[in-house]
Each structure stands twice: as C-alpha cells, then as structure tokens.
Image 1 (spheres, rainbow, N blue to C red):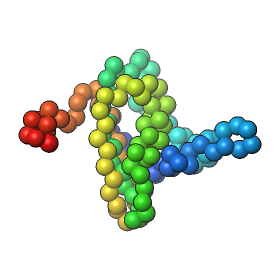
Image 2: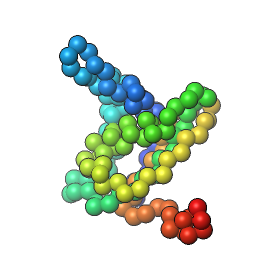
Image 3: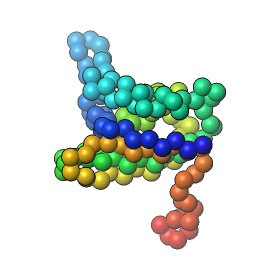
Image 4: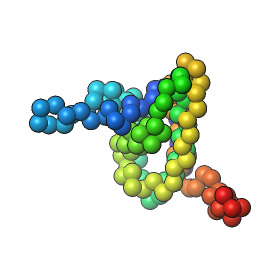
Length: 129
C-alpha cells in the first residue's frame, strides 16, 4: 500500500497550534483549517478496515519564501492531521524522512505514506552514514 498526495498548504507552526484563552486551551483556527484540508484530500484513503501495523512516511514541505520555519514543528502538525484524517494511531509510524525546500510562491506538502520501508536505511548506515 502506498498513498501519495499533495496538500496545497503548509501546516501552521506547532508554536501557534494551541492557544490559551482565559482558563482553557483552544486549537488555533489555522490548525483547524489545515486539519479540514488534510481530511478533504485524504478521506478516500481512510483506513476503514484498520491501519497497517507499521507505516513509513516521506514528507517534502515546499515553502513560498525564505522565512525560517522549524521542520519539526511543521512535521508534528502534519502527522497529527494525517493520522486523524486516515484514522490511525501515529505511534504506528516507524520512520519519517522530511525535507523542506523553497519554491518561490508555492506552499504545499508532498506526502508519501507506505506500509513498507521506502528508504534503504541499512545501506546508508553500512556505508558509514
């Protein structure tokens, strides 16, 4: 099983995803919008019969400008949105390769999700990394 998709937006930074208002926390509207967008794109791939025991992901974040964005913050919000959209526990992710590149004027995430390893990590480490 391999799922390939493009989400035509960047996830909001993890630093903005939860806001604290008065005495309760609330999810930031940008995060809710990204989750809805991910759900609309990934809904046809939803794991209705149960997710595989192990999943691997490759994520390419395309950023529209040179603004600094923490890759780990983008990744956490993406994985939470994808796991909610596909109905699987994100602890099933056994490996993630993530990269960000600037492509002027483009905001998007290319995602590949698979039930088998997509990169030969053993060969990488055997060659001394």
